[in-house]
Image (cartoon, rainbow, N blue to C red; front, side, top):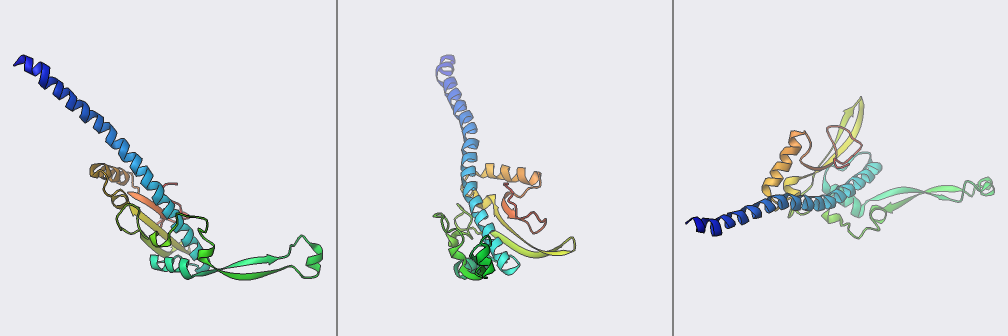
Length: 202
């Protein structure tokens, strides 16, 4: 019996323990790598959303309250740009009043993200890797120091962004964020505290 324990059972226990130890080290590493990869995609989407919202506000003076408005603005909206004809450095042209500025209307879709092959306006509303969960977006006008200020925020919760990953590690990550009073996910802008549309990853 002692030989059986020494030659078979003890080595088996050692192997099982070794496997469990390696797994306990590897799982968090793999989780962090996958989380970082997913966050990179999500951050780019939130940056795109911020740029589109900023362009919308420049045109209308407030942020788009819902995603449908923002998508329609990109697909069908126009913005006015000022084009200068001639150069103010050319004194003869200035004297002859040949230098002038004119307003030109141009489609938003022809100005934003035109060189990007990874931008798809119809995907903007969705949280990557979530199987269809949507970005939580809000826009308000709020009195800040006696001034009415337009604000917006867009959020992607870790429950959606990290869907199908290790559930316990997601719970741990969310708890860590909540314990330090941070949003448990990715967020750009804020309707509570004006932050110049910063992202919580910046």
